[in-house]
Image (cartoon, rainbow, N blue to C red; front, side, top):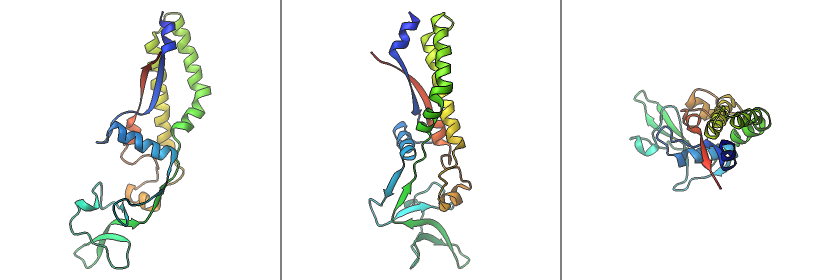
Length: 192
């Protein structure tokens, strides 16, 4: 009986959890933007995209009082009290998020090797009563999610833009706050 249940179960892996105040839908959007890349992002409600520096932290330009655009400079800054300026945002007309395939590359690298082998072992265990169909799928789902997380943590190319490296303090393209990493999960789905 358990063996037959496998014919109606599937495992789904991806950015399936809310993380760092982002909803599941927002995490899925972030994942897909990185997985496939997004060329030519341009401003929707103004002339410029605002790229935060480390000083801006997680605040938007609207949240910081006293910002201004110095003449001839593509930045938003504040006077620092020492006769200089502190730059909070760099202004650009367009950016591109490069393709950083962490889902597809993990599936390509793991499906025919470790995941297939794990599935064979687990299905055999279901067949002899050592594991239920749900335990089989849970074990496979956990392994798949861990492998995707490992890929996120190990990806180093394409590199972050210099402004991103300066803000993050590191060049790990898919890890900033850890929200994407933590959003990776699995679920078992039933189908007919």
